[in-house]
Length: 299
Image (cartoon, rainbow, N blue to C red):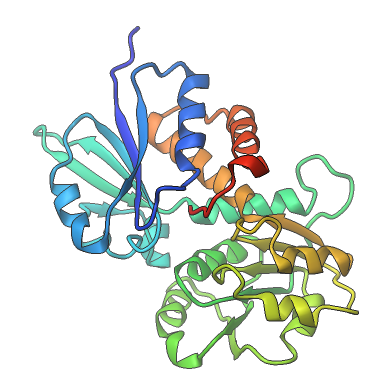
């Protein structure tokens, strides 16, 4: 049976170097979805409402990166519970309503991506060792939208009381409220000269700060022994200074490209109704991350 052509895209600002098109296009090809397209479209917060208003039935969905993950919320007809709790939508499903009108549903696949990347790094995908403890000790670096998704992911992994390091406690209000809605009780601290030592003793560390934002933590790891697993959601530069220092300290480090892969696979499932071809997407991602093709990248 012929498959109706559909459109999808990743929106953000800037977004030109996003790797999402590589992943989604590889998935469509592997699934035999001829006529499906996926593009990167530069859209600012001010332009988002106009773009959403122009959507039609040919659209299957949208991927959203910064700064649109909160801006989209009032434009949606429905928001899935997890996305509502986290307060961030990175996926919009475009569907026909009962009377032919479009229905926009917001979802969050970042949480899925973080959980999968951490489990992958911990060896739960076939390795004999490195499995996550039942109640891991966790540290989150950063307090933005991705940190909220990270807290939700850590809650799924049995850690309701992660330590969150922020540049200023005056800016953690939204994250604190999101954590409270999720039934989580993180401890909030300001980055200091003990941050690296606390990270080194944790089972799981997730860095959500921008590129080079954790370089000072990386420097302070020198001479320490890391016992756990690190996920750095940044993957340019690759590896980050924090990942390099973490591995030198004896820990296992996973780059943000693994989170990107798994959250994109969940988006493909939601938008197409098919199980995502993870191996094909992974192979396409590896090719795109070749040093000769690297540029500034975004989710």
